[in-house]
Image (cartoon, rainbow, N blue to C red):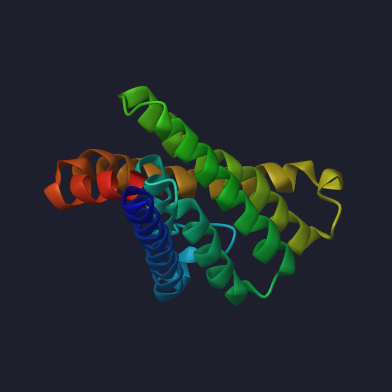
Amino acid sequence: ASDVYKRQILMKKTATLKLATAAVVGACYAVLTMILAPISYGAVQFRVSEALCILPFFMPCTAWGLFGGCIIANLLTGNIFDIVFGSLATLAAALITAEIGRRGHDLGRKILACLMPVLFNAVVVGAVITSAYNGLNIFSHPAAFGLNAAQVGLGEAAVLFVIGLPMMYYLPGLKFFREFTIKLND
């Protein structure tokens, strides 16, 4: 019975650590986005906080923190479609990034992980921006959608490949990060 009790305590501590980690990542995402608001919102955006979208590759629990942080950050837009669908795009990309990370950490998977937020946000946020400026029917404005998707995608790619991909190499080199992810993922 003693071993079962110890295992239950360990499981509770791990769950608490995962929740706290997700909350901190979400708070960081929201704060970074809002502090850098002039470049974080609009048709042309360079949302530096999106670099944090690489974290689920190493720590799957952070996907939910990114989702919460994105909801908070998107509240500033006042656009319900951005709040709902933009945040869901971040969640979908983060969950897929986590799954990619579970399968290995080679260069190909790192690049694929960086592509997920680019693809999801280009399509979803591109559609949200198009509908916000051209009415709800994005299909009647394919050129506007294409332009918006390209602009969002390029900004996202710049963040993920200029900041995120190097972080994917740098962070595992830090002893604290390695030990923390091992503890978190046990």
